Image (cartoon, rainbow, N blue to C red; front, top):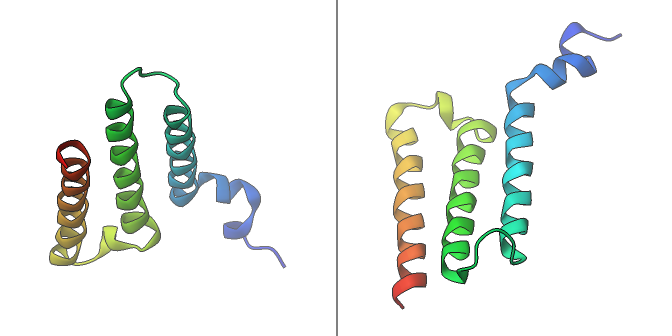
Length: 96
């Protein structure tokens, strides 16, 4: 027996499917940047790849770990984690 919520068309309309496609596009963008396309500066490419990676971490945390609907303090921990760790990784990369 098939329910309306499990049809292939309803899966395409689901929010998590759209987020999944965004994650795939971000992965392809990272690959494209990492294979010497688009930007001549290796440092700028690397920083963009780091930023894309942490945007992906944020999307996974919010939508697939369902922190989007979590209490505000828990969501703020995720947001702060993404910002602080991303800034630290980029800072260590650029200045170490």
